[in-house]
Image 1: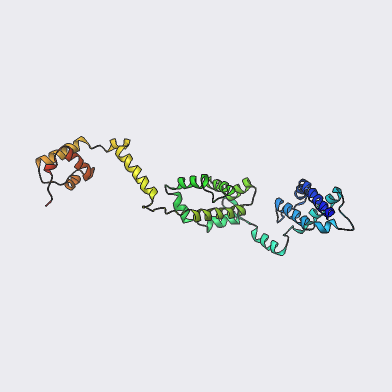
Image 2: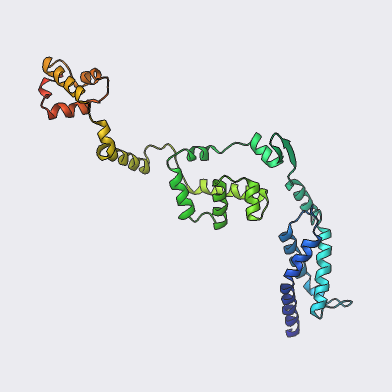
Length: 286
């Protein structure tokens, strides 16, 4: 039993040490049109060798007793596996790979992938995100999603930031080392997670955040530098004064608001009238 365990440990150690050579073999013999990429091939070859280690160790015709024996076996297995999987490892894989491949179409801007062409011609932007990007909540939500939330993985946050920067799927794929189809799938996962974890009503006037925003706006209106720009014109003040004094009890606040062409509302006029004690000349409601 101990001998067998030692053999297994030695086998695993040889396989671990062979990874660099395995990558070189795949890189050299992999076809440009191969259905699987470099990392997928290396992973599948390792899995195949591990599944067959008992058979390989007990092979009578060519037993694996030394590192050189293992290297010969691993090289042979890798070469054969690359040929076997040139168009997919199984009928199911072949069918999937065939559907996964993206063709090229001609356009005014040059050649585009079929996926991009479909997105541009019949694709539509999610109305939720279209309205969200136009709202004042957008930047706050982005900051919360990227800096404080945990429902997106670090990798998804990285992809999300690249999408926000305006990069297309191919550019993001090149930067991250995956296909644009994979980036598309990740994007869908990201947007679904955002919609499931953030319940936002873009135009909800009763939300606490909008109430706070309106409060801040009112404070600025009352005490901010813009207040000087709202000061009543002295000519208008003299007009209101003379109108009330010369025609007492004839005009109400609403009437005065109309006479100054609604440059000031009735509250502003009332504040001036009360401060100057002209309120006794206002028209009394019956």
